Structures are given as structure tokens and as C-alpha cells.
Length: 110
Image (tube, rainbow, N blue to C red):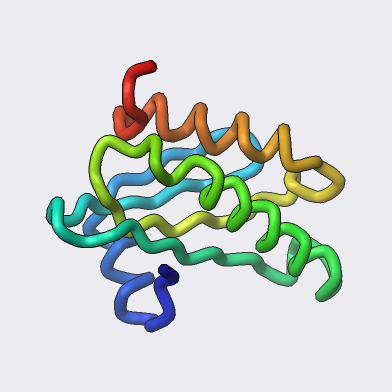
């Protein structure tokens, strides 16, 4: 499930919570219990060429896919890649994402 429309991106960024952690900025807004979590990814040209931006998007989507079941409740999530994501591997991106979720209180206690 992905966020696709500009109005959804702007709603989450305007009304939701925001946290900067490592190589990403996480914006999220809680949803009702019956819906599924949705993800939107933003990569700017400041990151690099199309290959670099596509890799950043793939890393963020994969980290979300692997850990979306660990969220306390379904959320609309917008992840913005920072310049520091360039050259990082999946493990580093995963740890930044989980740290952001932990600090935001949306990660289940384990």
C-alpha cells in the first residue's frame, strides 16, 4: 500500500507528527484499526542522479516492508530521504527507521 496522491502527502506532512533520525525524516499520522499502513517516499535531486534516488527509495520501501508489522497501529507514513542515505546499506537504513519509530512511540514493545 502506497500513498500516491499529493493531497495525502501534504495531509500527513501538515497534520501528522515529524521526527528526524539519521538518514531520514519520518512523518506519520495514525489511522483507524481497520485500515492498513501506507507508505510514501520522497527523494529530492539534492541526493544525486536518478540511480541514487531510486536506490534510496528502494531501501526505504524495503525497510518499511520488513518492519511494518511491528507498528502499534496502522499509519500513513511519509519518509523523506536525507543526503546521508547515499552509500548506506539496508541494515543502516533499517536501524534509522526503527530508531525513529521507537522515539516516536509507534513501535511495539519487544
